[in-house]
Length: 154
Image (cartoon, rainbow, N blue to C red):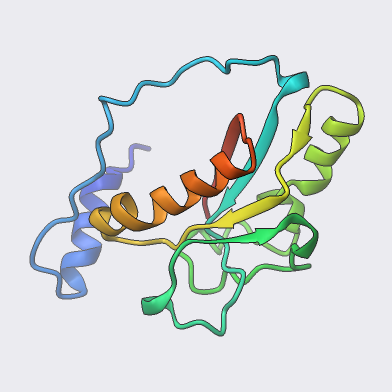
């Protein structure tokens, strides 16, 4: 079975009253690259779209960094779009694998975890993402001497 995801998404937003199609981000000018260090020497940052502070209204959320020792037991994922029929987010480790990453640090296959993790909202404005959220997270990663970042979107 072939699902035409992009067309299906366009149809979904048109049904909600949006008149212009969503323009998918295209970052061909930014190639993937090999890590500069072996994983055993690298510091990793976690970036998530799971909501840390659900009391902040969705329209006013922006990227934010949190101390790694303040990870919530459960993130709010109720308003995010994902297949809630065939999967769930009851198991935090399935979408925020802190235990698995910590065990990698302990066994030496990963150097360390950054002292902060980062939240980025599911923002439909590429301009906002490019001019506000991404620069903030990049600055925090540089401050934390991060070598690699893993984005785990929901």
